Image 1 (cartoon, one colour):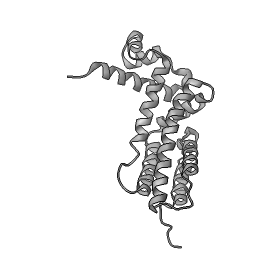
Image 2 (cartoon, one colour):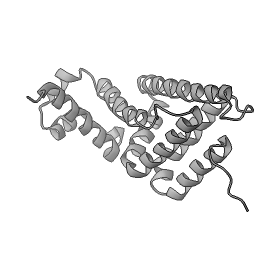
Image 3 (tube, rainbow, N blue to C red):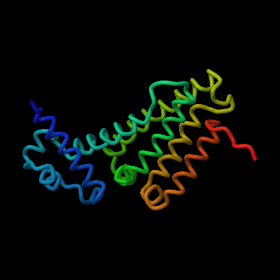
Image 4 (cartoon, rainbow, N blue to C red):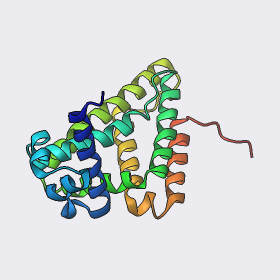
Length: 194
């Protein structure tokens, strides 16, 4: 038996995600999202009382995609390498994700509610990266010169920058250059002999 309330909720989130990717925040109207999901506006409001709740669900959807790039096994260095490589593939394969993340970043600068939602996910990602680097440095698989807090901040800044649609979608070579350099900087790849 199909769980219809969950299927409707998922359809709303996917429709809102697609709207954000195609039309930006200015084109994200709950009536349009409801129509795209094949439901009426009352049904949308049954599942999501506010537009902010819909946006929060879209952010959660995007973060599930990111969470799936974090390997669960291996040394911290192997996990970090796996995360970077899976993120590179995700950004290449899903240009809509880059647009949605770009829209969220731009809106967060002007909207305290969106800033709070994005801030929560950023804090989680920072803690995760910092923890990987801390364990890697302590275990000797990452260089002792690496400061976990600074590395996490630098990785996030670089990855958010390269995920912007103006880079990831229009300049994919920059995406590769950034990821390659991050792996070299962290000592996650061996240099080829000259």
